Image 1 (cartoon, rainbow, N blue to C red):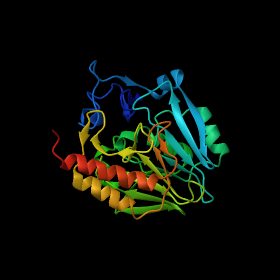
Image 2 (cartoon, helix red, strand yellow):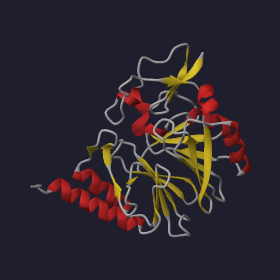
Image 3 (cartoon, rainbow, N blue to C red):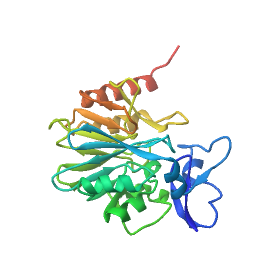
Length: 271
């Protein structure tokens, strides 16, 4: 038997002789099943044709991204702190080279994930580095492989190491979370946002959706609440879910300006 991995979203499922009849993540309206149907792979097959690339984004922050494109295509972010390293969001591929590089940088103290689309093979990362995975309890139904290393937190904030705080924003998922890094952006603060706050193609803007592939919006009330929550935190930079998607300065203003415009468009009557 082998762990089964959905090739469309990268979510891993328990050991089984055959893949599941469907991927629960993909049949939800916030994801999609390809027109050709669900396709499955295994950790061994994935590692045989893919590698993880690395990039230094700023001092103490690394991007890890799988090549060629796999699943949704998100990046993981490795944040180094004086109190231990944190992996933000998860990618499916954990190969030997990635393990050795992370161990060389001090290993992992914790893993935190923004929402279920990026749960991927979090259980394997946790076991390999002997650390906990912090997930918001509001999204527990989307855990496909239960594991003792998965810590479901409650409430609105959780400081996982000093200066690194998880903020529940909701929106895209009920437990949708971003990470606030107080020392990021040379002390001005940074948000690691996944796609709970999606950095747009125009890197001066962000957006917020219920479903990104199916282009389904959030309500004006929800967007106002997200913006109000982030308005209480100091940050100048935003690192989004995908390579190249970061607001390098003016991040807090970009959130407020983008949210106001989003609400305005929902409220106005177009000709």
